[in-house]
Image (tube, rainbow, N blue to C red; front, side, top):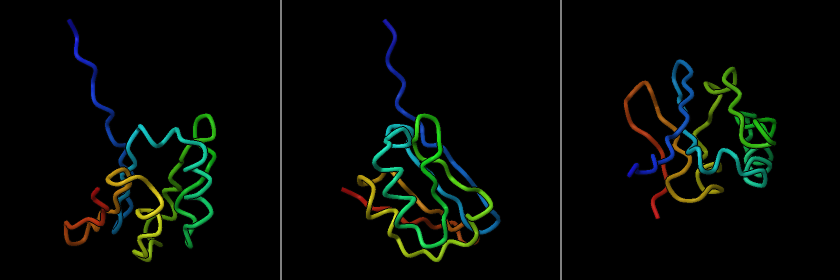
Amino acid sequence: MSAEAEPRPETFDGVFIGVEVDEAVAADVELAKKLEEICPVDIFSASGVGGGVRVVRENLDECVLCELCIQAAPPGTVRVKKLYDGTELRRES
């Protein structure tokens, strides 16, 4: 009997900022559109596989830590990591 693997987050790192998006929500077309619309520095695009979330790596370090992406996504599914101090922004349920 094999256990199903838990979805793993996709991690994208810039120099100063990293973003993790859980696989479970990365394929959500509606969430991808919402993230693309609300991010003021265009870190998210709705041009991923099947119209899902794609992180625009070259824009990661433009993040202004506004937390709009974190608030738009289900709790715990989008995390913004501050690579310069080891902390992260996330919303818990």
